[in-house]
Image 1 (cartoon, rainbow, N blue to C red):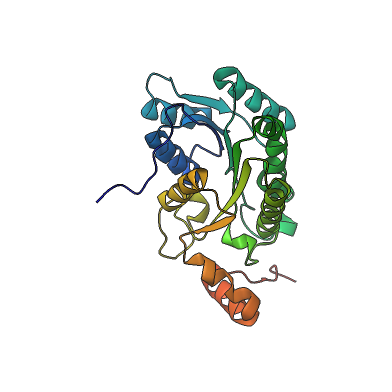
Image 2: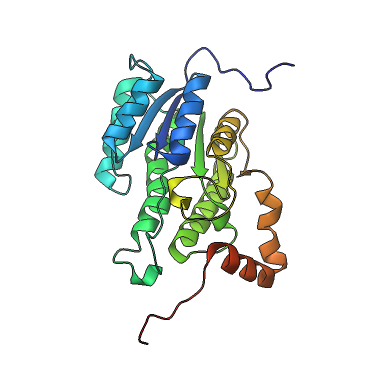
Length: 262
């Protein structure tokens, strides 16, 4: 049986990947490195990035690491500048960095809007930075890592950010039709990552998302789910919202709890 994975052209495609130090980002970096991409890996943890890059590319020929906070405009600009100085271009942007409220309700968090800054504003601004050069070349890929929580509302700020990211992705795709620049949304369900460490469900590893990302880089699609069966499941919410209410409360423990003494 032949390998169904398409081969890359001889010239290495340069991919900028955010949130690359762990979870889905790390798995995606490993998968894309194995396929022969040149990578610009960014996250806040410089030590984890360096360790990963050394493991994947000991000579440092095809991987650049840049420690940056994507919620900071100067950090975003320096990140893109470093990528261009090293490789001369950015062929694909993968907006993977994401956070959620650490615990409790979003309205009790001291900085709930940081979730929107990282999950929604940062992808928009990074796209704005790389898009002009892609349009000038007539080629490029933007891949946004959304979530099933962007179709089925669960936690306030997190779902708000992922609903917004989905809207941005789908609308930008239509705005760019015919330009040669593709926009794809990859929406994971429950995946075994540090963010879901307390979720008591059987979950696939982040490699399933990494494979989906690799597929849309080579064969762009409007929206894909990882694993694929989350697609039909996500549509249940629009048909039977009451059933979804019960499922979310049981599986995720999403329920208002009155503070003690009130």
